[in-house]
Length: 176
Image 1 (cartoon, rainbow, N blue to C red):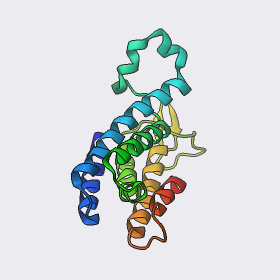
Image 2: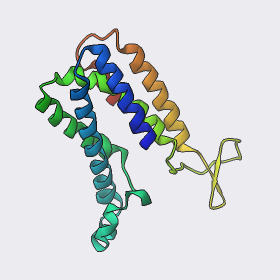
Image 3: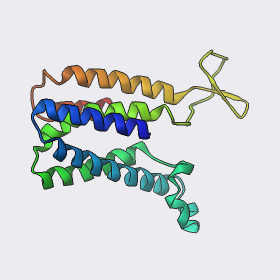
Image 4: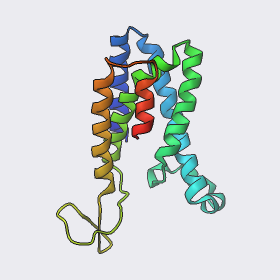
């Protein structure tokens, strides 16, 4: 996940420079979005998957290294903090969202490599299955990182041919 964050930060800075935007202002948006994303990822996981456990063990909320993050919460928290920071920095919201969308999906793809969430059991032993507790499962994270990279390629190519501001970000949301 950290490698994905770093890749996203570096790509966002590069794109800010290409677009003639303040690299520092864009970095601030990315930094606060990452913080909001981490908080959102943890909160949504806690609320959806194990609220009673975390109510009984509140210090466990801080142990993100033990697992328990939600990509949907990360996106929600990151977008909310990003909007706040974009407005505070007086950047154009849709231009900034378009600029950051490829960096976001690239970071997600790289971060997905470290995920240990596996999918449904496989009917027969394909060579790409992952054995977990004696059951052969689909490697869902490999499927998702592949789709994330394909979405990154689509967004990257789309950068120079948009019809309106916000189009790349909307394609990110729909594609993801």
